[in-house]
Image (cartoon, rainbow, N blue to C red; front, side, top):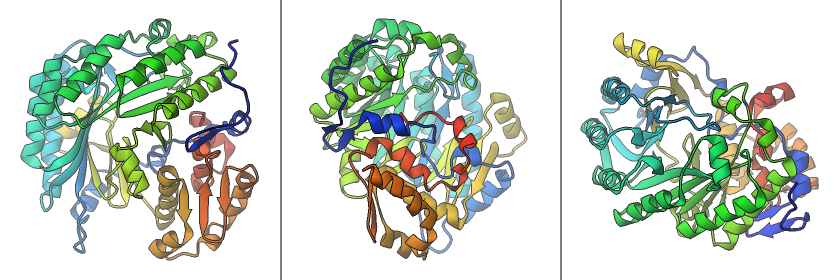
Amino acid sequence: MERSLTSPVAELFGSVEFDPELIRRYDRSGPRYTSYPTADRFVEAFNAEAYRDWAVKRNIGGFKRPLSIYVHIPFCNVVCFYCACNKIVTKDKSKAEKYLQYLYREIGMQAPLFADDPRVEQLHWGGGTPTFLSDDQMRELMGVIRSQFKLVKDGEYSIEVDPRKVSEQTVATLAEIGLNRMSMGVQDFDEEVQKAVNRIQSEEETVSVIKAARKHGFKSVSIDLIYGLPKQTLMGFNRTMERVINADPDRISIYNYAHLPHLFKPQRRISADDLPVPEVKLDILKLAIRRLTEAGYVYIGMDHFAKPDDELAVAQRQGRLHRNFQGYSTHADCDLVAFGVSAIGKIGPTYSQNFRTLDDYYDRLDRGVLPIMRGLELTADDLVRRCVIQSLTCHFQVSFEAVEISYLIDFQRYFAAELAELKEFADAGLVTLDERWLTVTPKGRLLIRNICMVFDKYLRADAERRRYSKVI
């Protein structure tokens, strides 16, 4: 076992205090809260007809929300063993062409539902690997979207890229068609770790894509890392952090690897014996936080860091930060329209998800039906709890008065059981409570998922928590 680079006592890194004893005490399974209620609570009773009804009436009463668009491209050239995304591993490019034709059909069916106000302020292409598509296919896809929706000037238009498969010419194409933000997976630069997870990616090809993004005017570049991967060591990850910081991305995310081979087949090719023991894993996380804060990055929350002048950090300081299915966002008031297999959208007080397999997705579109597999119409209770959880994950505090005004409740009476449960966290120094505010302390910020779970009415039984990853 490797020794920690620092002592085991609590340490303050900027706005985050790392207390290993508290983290060990509260390291339990729980949702990441990209939505509330979480997607596993969606029901099949919410179908294409229900979605269409809500889309049509979303602007009733004169209150109009701009749109956010998510497009799911499920294909990857090779499988990364750690991956838990909905993807299709293939080298057959013809599958992408067929998929695009069905995707265009879905876009054509959905667009008329939003014709009264087709303004789009935010767009994200995810996967899979969206850059599995050729330059011409990506140009065509953006053309189809623009023909049906109005992408506003200076909107937030992002794409996930695989640096191993992206040339400078492709980056230039992405900029040409209007994309202006980019995220890329790195996970770890250590060669032994890369071999263990079947993702060989050099520092050079990663940095070259970042440089190309800067050259072609991308406003933000984000790098994703994962701690807890097989063969990972403290010294090895320290070298990775050095390289990542030198690459100078605007945002860095460091995710906890959740080893769930019973749920995700590719993970069965990872030996549990190769995973770092819990103490080393915790030391790796502490090291990453220290290196990032020393380099000037701000802890946004939920594994995300950003430069102080990045849009996310600015939005957080101004109280405008939001969290959705793609993570943190500066666009809180958008309805999310989702296209593609397994894609999740949000219209008004509803969530919806498309079918997860290509066969089902294609079948519904062949029958002229929107490919909605399931969804949820939120109750009044869901909405108020979503508000509280959003405030916690984005701003680390909740104003009782603000919630009371918005939802016409008495906060302390409505959440009496939750506030009583939070006293344990208050005694541990994770939160402070007074008559009007719930505030998460620097010591509690790494455990924000635990604090949100107190307000999740669907998580009262411990047995239900086992379906989720550990919070740390």
